Image (cartoon, rainbow, N blue to C red; front, top):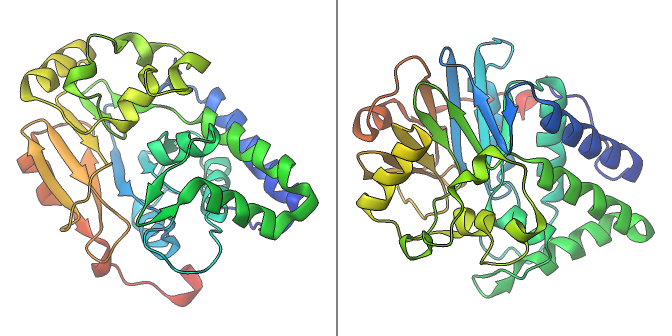
Length: 295
């Protein structure tokens, strides 16, 4: 179980984020910016979470991380969906996930997504009429005041420690998205095998940005990337999926975990199947009962 955190204590928050960042870099399965998980056991894959702590609690419950052969992939953790009129305090979701990494350092894999990358590089995102990066910063300042800069630095360190992908030798790859087909001439397919550079992350011409922001892929491109990276099935987020899961192609599943129809998907790492077969195992988060003490 993740250790207890005081979300308003800057020292506790910073220590948690920085400790988790070190553990992500030290993960024994890490090669470059990819975590290579075993071809046995089960990986539980979330879609975009967007500051939905209740659904995160459900995902943690079913992932049963006490079982050492279970792994958990989480993505797009910050920036709540919809305009609430309240401060954005989604840094708490980052801290909660960091705490989970500390408790299960070889099993929990928060992957880099476009919202986290934009937050860490201070590039605006407008959604639903709101600018989300500034709102996040205002939320951190609302809680931490004069200690805001230290907390932001720790948040950014944790974000930049996140792997860009999680992959199994059996053929599964979890990443937030794939580059646009039009970007493939500039995209460095070797990026998964090395650590990220500033050039990769600081503007939309960087390969990390291309990967987490891409929305327009072709079957030919997907097949080429699958062959290059040894992938049978891509599990992605970064798309609005009203039913929580959608087959974009035979090799691509899209997932959401942030709304009422959100899902989490268990994948048997010993037998990676096509998208249509795999999606039948998806679990609606609304079907998972929670005791109030588990939240």
